[in-house]
Image 1: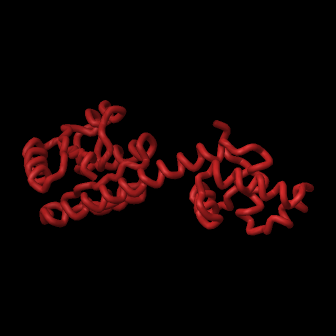
Image 2: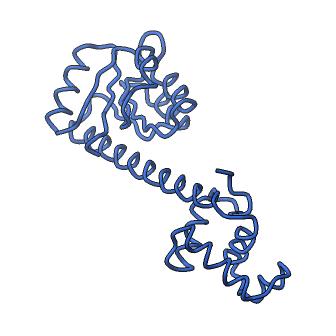
Image 3: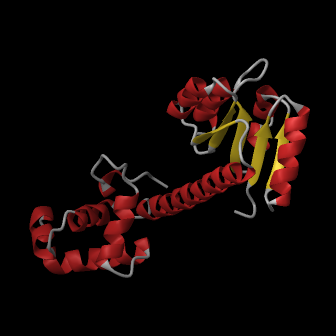
Length: 214
């Protein structure tokens, strides 16, 4: 998390300075922004991390910002800060994708815990995304026949059954299987299956035959 930055967005300069001091003292990299609009203008170049934003601000408020970020940077975790009576707005923000909300006045440790949790979540998501991307690139290197064999393996079929389904010999299936293991950089069948499963949405069956082209 050392390269991650906490982006604080609040129109109140005192709040920005106070949070910047708190976070930097806690060893977190922090960057402050005086409005949601200003932040969005810099979005393309900002470092990954998380966003801590006030829910009520002139112009674009925190709820509108969260909805916009869900479109532009859906994996950037957002924590909203709310004042008394703003909890319904915070709940709306969470429904739109915010990971947490903190009610003012808040305990410093509560905010720091929420931020560290958001940063850890973002790190996990980024690592998973990189891994899935690498697996996708390897899948794209497979020939059509290798993908057919891979699909059979993922479906739990033995070599003889795959050979029968594809109209080739079991020995040929063994050759394709070895090629698949090498190209996918898998040291076991279970590792190979886990790779393919990692590329599929939770509610869908993986289909190695539909891997993207390089």
